[in-house]
Length: 284
Length: 155
Image 1 (cartoon, one colour):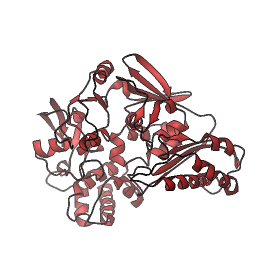
Image 2 (image 1 turned 180 degrees about the vertical axis):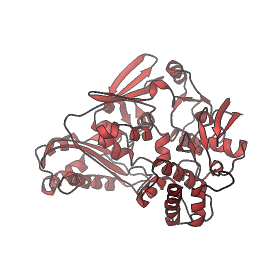
Image 3 (image 1 turned 120 degrees about the vertical axis):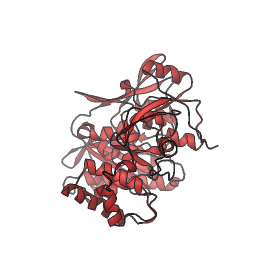
Image 4 (image 1 turned 45 degrees about the vertical axis):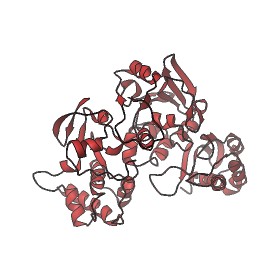
């Protein structure tokens, strides 16, 4: 059923009141880019919404020596304007492809993660950097690795009354090259049919280390650790990468949906590995 | 719920359900029908307005989210009875056909030119990727934004 009237929204005065309201069954609202669409389409019918988008406890980015703590209600546009993309270029590559300017001004990193979409763009850098999700709820604070926080499509480890407070994003050692390729049916404002994000540590043309995260080809974003392992010691040349394409494709568990068939997702994932060749300094 | 915000430079105070869409608040309660509803779900950009100088989709914004903020709509661009350079450029470059998407394009472009007064054609296209037009084929819209940028740079 399509909902036409205004939905009830409560604005808590602080984090404690927000937790109490969510505990009572209220659904957290931050940017609204997903919540309002799903309520309007009748997919969700929460008794009321709790507007947490401007709570100071969920705002701001704090840089430390070894990483950054990003508030859950920081918008994608704020992340792009911050120093984070300078420190971690993977964020620039991903965020510039997320939605369009107005969506980026509205949507938040916490909302993107809470949605737990297998195609959630911000999950790619969070998986690559092995970020932690800091939650707060009636029983206090918790901190979980992102891979333990996301349980499946739309499913997270949040307990009743818990909300995401922030993300701890550790800076990786060295200076890895960042790569992101999002496949879609348009050039902008699209949800990924599949995506590959990577961090690659190079010594000349030899791969010292690599991390690969795949989007929209499994119930959650996944790391391809088997392929990461095999990349170590190989040269960043076509002959060395090509034998691994099938192996990367085999790590996927794709479904067929409105955006594409499963066989396409599997095959295209394998070929995306060759995109890493663009990280070669001589061909850039 | 009583909220107050600045609308096109003027302070307004309204009694409104907190979940009322900014779009409905503008069009139905305050009579500013320049802002249009296209898809109602964030795909088309027709309802773009600026909140604190940044583009936002008014169909996915609740009244409570603009409490205490500054809202700028297409009606707020004209100064002293003169069209804003963006509006003038859209007319001159034929960036308008049926006109339904135009307020959204102009508000999005306004935000771009504030941030980047001399964009390349590709930067204009990238920035306007969240706005759909079913008439012009976009070429004239891009030309209009580049022309407006020139007008604004030349003062």
